[in-house]
Length: 98
Image (cartoon, rainbow, N blue to C red):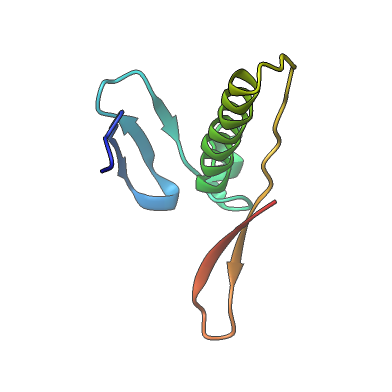
């Protein structure tokens, strides 16, 4: 049986050209698509792929450290996630992570 350990919520207003705010208010980030006028006006804005990459890398690194603890091996690790937004021939979107 699966046990929920944690649930969080982030609300985005404005989609890929908007703002993301966590339910607890600890996380607020402006979102802008690369190359758009908004991105040029707000160079500090992030994009959804960066946010996905941050979450993916954090979770993967945490998993590595958990395995290290189980195996009683201590090590330093750093994970880089490269996230790509893809568009297929029929204009369907997907993500790729390396």
